[in-house]
Length: 304
Image 1: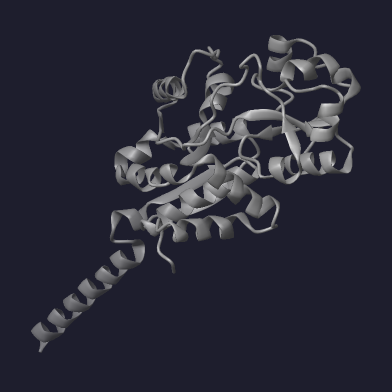
Image 2: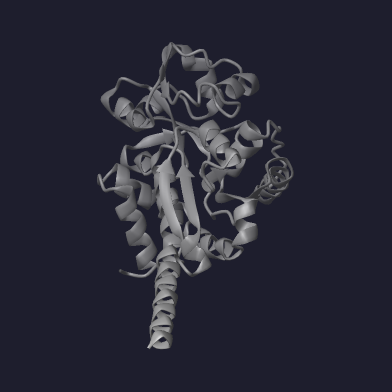
């Protein structure tokens, strides 16, 4: 009788241990918590949500959080507060690495440079970049730009004292922003510079409170609001494809993460990203809803 009771007790303990292992995530991916970050504007919200959903579909315990801007996202990544976030090659080159851009550099040259430097300096890995180039740009209402004869960034630099400029606080400070434009083009002494939340730039142009604003190459508002993008005639801005930047220690432990995230880049060209951005900004949909719909439609995650 005692032997049977002891055997029953041992079997019960083994069963409980099995249940605990299952609950804690017997598979390696389920036990790994990953925090995906992004900056605080529409395209970054979309990409951050997409990375998170791809990882969740692959079995990881992934969550998404947004951070204020480039420096905050980079600091969080280096410090280990997040494990990855989407970054643009041109931003990394000029703002984070403090390197100069030579217009003879191709998009691949810029990518290769930041990939090597980030690994050497920060122990961070750049994964596959998107097809689209989400470059900074400057835009004005087309009628106003035409009436003032402003077609290029050089034209704008000379007539800035007649115009009100609205942009983000970050753009007024970073080297690929207003300080750099002043160095390369001269001028840019606007009648007024207003630092705004990113969501208020285009509404300010639409209402007539702003004459010119910053844009990104994939912004849906450019076509929707009949804005004129001024030609960067001195090739000030480098290429800006975007890619997941990931802590190397995470990829060393889970190399499959690279394959999981790299599936996304070939699906995103400029027209596609512009449309996704417009679904949020123009049609007032939630970024996570738009992200999930896109991933499911393209077979990148399950439809559940």
